[in-house]
Image (tube, rainbow, N blue to C red; front, side, top):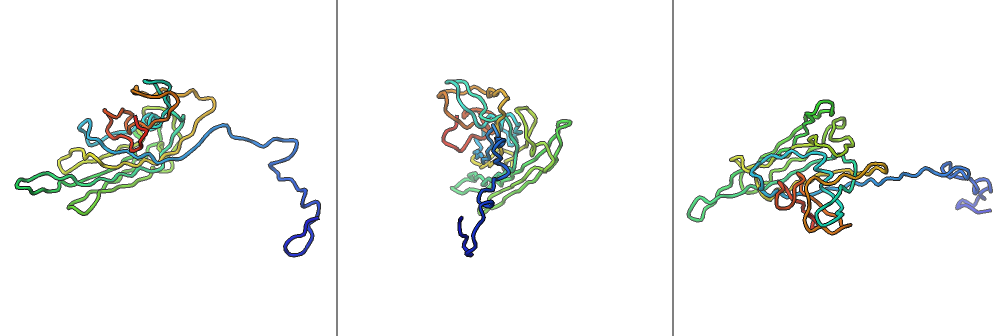
Length: 230
């Protein structure tokens, strides 16, 4: 018999007590799927000449892929949900002649629309602007708990959220940082989905990160900040 710290002996019955989850004649439950959280960071490129982009659930699943060949890849996970979107932008400058420059302002925004009928609309949005040289425009927003963006979604073309980033003239600001906090999981009986845009130079079995809108490096509104981007 084992002696406890207080000097009292512990009975054999207590020592041999079996956890309820480990009953000998019944195996414990196991989960045959992988679930993980990650923050994907993107950098705006000014490609496409638009200051607004709508990001679909398909885009979010395409943003983390496994290559099956030089030009083919599949989504690494089968389900995704959004926890938060944060965007930061610094005001660009323009030359006013004689070596002088002026700041052109910066405005950023995030919207969780949910405009597809039956998709649990959120209708939540926020915006921030910066003037002068000492301030970064920043907005950070979570989707409503009962909105479609915060539920597990399969690969579909419904818009998860909209991101805005512009100067005073409505032009896209390159170099803005977009952080998208996501939860991913796979399904044991779900067939993997091929990514929408073909890759180039992929190595079979390697994992890659794509653009925020599903585009490749040369054609995306905001490229991945991670080194294994494609």
